Length: 326
Length: 299
Image 1 (tube, each protein chain N blue to C red):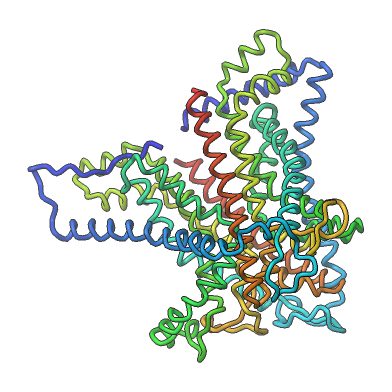
Image 2 (image 1 turned 60 degrees about the vertical axis):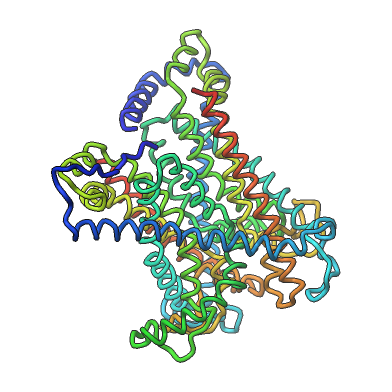
């Protein structure tokens, strides 16, 4: 792989060096170059426009806001005077996606290891396809499934966790229910599994053969080989993969909106019904939103946009650093 | 896909101590378990959707809209929603594909290594991570609030375009990079201008791969619900014009029906989910098929 990209960049550099001359000044060439460059610049313009228009439409609502946007737990932008804050939404978003990440990462890395090293080699690609199918299922279907099937089955699990781990505030509370942040996290975990596992698998496949064979030559067992040769090599790749999964979980809307029942106020007992996230709140409140209400939703969407942007950029940076050093 | 084999060769020289062997076996069991664990939701989702969706998977469902049908009534269907989804996805593809392919052409053929190309490439990555609801909010803020247009299928298509562009750019870019440089050079040597080389040599060579990428991207945006809720709004009636008035779509149809506690509505929601999954799986399979044929003939 690396040699191929090496050739590619060399070719690219050569293209560039002779680029001006290769555009012969013919009309067709000129038009095509401008169309291609224009499309690329359009992509940049779209990104800029997203930030600009979200800010523009959010500011009036924020100015009308009678409560502290960052610390208030209420969401009543349609009231007079409008009062809304993102505290509850931020809490729900962060807790549900982190929990999803904690559930999904070990399983996803297990799957990646299974496909890369444990499964019969001929089956590796079909099995990878099966896991990718999980990613092909649309989120609305996960929402429907989570609401009508999983939530019912999660009640027992929640009660069990509540009895056994009730002394931890997170799992405490008096009435563990089915439409809780915990159930939403499980749905999210399923949805981000394929991303984390396919990216980790890509990294595992790139582990230099020499490292693996050296470990085997020293008499390492299969697990010892993985621990000594594969995991250290793939560490930053796995971290990047899970961070991309985190970003995806934070932005996931419909599945969460369908599973959660809205109860106002932050509730640290995540096994109890209630809670909301940025995205779910937007989908649920949009139908009845007034002008200020829409502005308020755009403002909360802006916060979500910034958070996911930071998470994603950090993830890309982690992955890119690996590429540079290895 | 050359994964190094870790099959341990037992030699008579050394025997592995019990502790190490036990640890090895435990990890192996855990890894197998992880894979089986992932199969549970997949099988469960597909099975429930097929089982519950089959009930209303009938002619009425495909031939009728929800106009005048209340939640508790039997009958009614998703004709308006299927029509809306097809129109929206078609418009999305028509807008997103040219932009995305040209962007990829710029990244690989013209800009490679340059500063503008690196910036574009970075923001395409960032764009991949945009939550779909934010794309919806953007179109709401720009198209509906700032420019004053009304809810329409086209507004929904604009939101989906933003989600589709980065996927298609990445797929096309990968495929263009696979085109051997010899082909380009041979074409230049014959005095063919650069744009003709790209249009008639490079792109056709990469075409099957690009089509696979486009189909996968279409399958992905087809299931998006959140941006559509904010841009096409809801309607129960058939609206064939994507440029005016709210339009329905399959995902928002499911969302709407699932919100109604009546069993008849829930059944319609499941049937809608079955139709949606069928379309998406077919697209996925077709994409794999195209990709495989490319592999067989292209090398």
